[in-house]
Image (cartoon, rainbow, N blue to C red; front, side, top):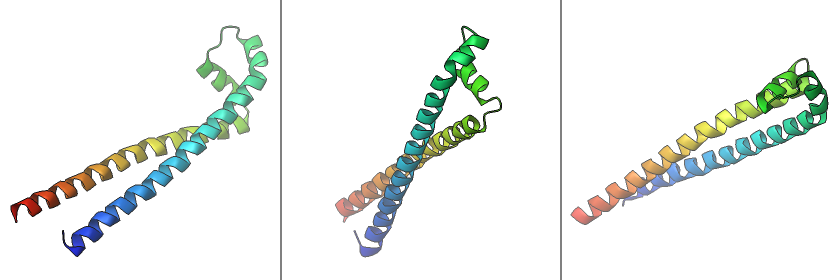
Length: 113
C-alpha cells in the first residue's frame, strides 16, 4: 500500500466515523422527540379516550396534534430525525463496503506483486 492509498483509506474511515456520529445524534433526537410526544400523549389520553373509546396509538397521535403545536413540533422532529438516521445507516454501510473493497484490492495487488 502506498502513501496515497493509505490517505484515501483513512479519509474514507474518517467520513464513516463522522457519519456515525451524525447517526447517533439523529437517533438520539428522534428518540427524545418520541419520548416527549408519548409523555404528552399519556397526559392527554383520558381526554382523547373520552372522545373515542377504542382509539389506537396512531389515531390518538392525530387527535393530540389537532391544534397542539407542541405535539406537532415533536412529531415533525421525530419523523425528520428518523428519516435522517435511516438514510445515514445506508451511507455508513456504503462507506464500510467501499473501505472493504479498497482493502481487498490492496490485498490482491500485494499478493500479485
